[in-house]
Length: 114
Length: 114
Image (cartoon, rainbow over all chains, first blue to last red; front, side):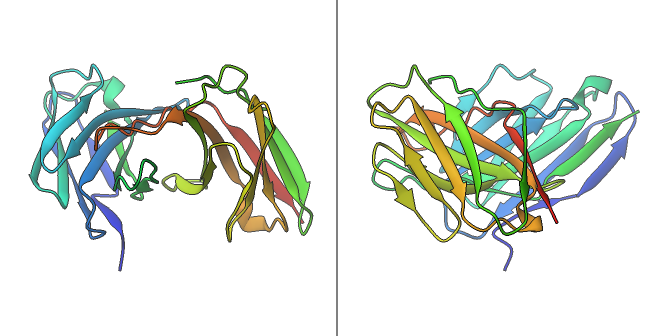
C-alpha cells in the first residue's frame, strides 16, 4: 500500500549514459514533483506536473526531461549523464485542498555517476 | 517566500519534549509555516503547518508567536525514531495547482539520546 514509489532505489552508471527513474503514486493526487538532494544534503525542486501538464521547471539542464504518461506517474529521463548529476532524487505528490496541502515523498533514488 | 533560520543541531533526551525553534522575521501575512522532517535515507515527511493559530496533531504541536516572526515545533515525548533533520518552511498557499514549491533550508539535525 505504498503511497509514492520510485524505481530503482539505487542506480550506478557511467558518464555519458542515458537513464530513467520511475515514480508512481496511488494517492489519487493531481500533482507530482521531482526534487534533487545533492551531496551537501540541500533539497531542491526540479519539476512539478499537474494533470500531466508541466507547471514548475526550475532552470534544470535540458538533459533532464520529465515525462508524465498519466497523473499517477512522473518519470525522469536523464541524457548524457555527468558526474554532477550524482545525487538522491525524490519524487513527491500532493493535492491542493482549500489553499493548503502537504507533499508526500517517495523513498528516493540514489544515482551515482562514475 | 520568506527565509527561515534554524539552529543547525539540537539534542534531546528520550521521553522529554523536543522544542525546535524557527525564526521567520520577514514572514508575510499570507504565508504559512510548514514543518517537514527527513529521517536518514528516507524522503521528507510532512509534520504540521499553520498560519497564525497554534496547531496540534498526532505527531506534534506548532506554536506561532503573536507577531508570527517565529515558531516552535514541539515533539511532546521524543523517541529515538524522532532523530532526523527538521525543516521549517514558510510559503504562501499556492493559487495554482502544481505550483506548491517547497524550498528547503539546512534544517535542524535533532538527535534523540537514550
